[in-house]
Length: 100
Image (cartoon, rainbow, N blue to C red; front, side, top):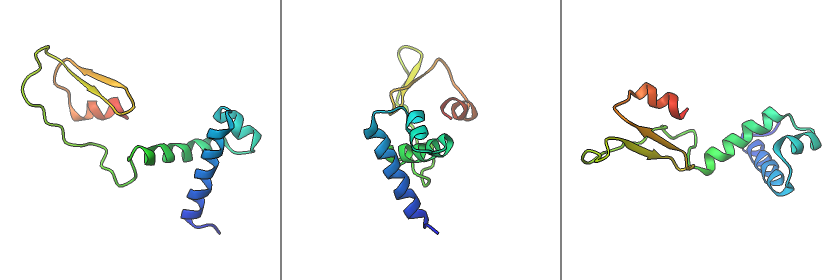
């Protein structure tokens, strides 16, 4: 039986092979007899680790706003380039739903 570390390394190698193949994820999975949902699971874990969002991260970081916005709104740009624009106060539950 494979250890968790061996399985992780094997799946990272699979992701690297896919990236070098030039194929879409689905095409790669079909050609290599890999269940797409399994590939996608490992690819998400790989992306999260690359982005520093491992299982130990809290998901939120403290945000301090100094002074009021002159325009009356706040724009938050995420590391992946997505932007969230706030025109007024929002609840934590709303924020969680927006970025989930």
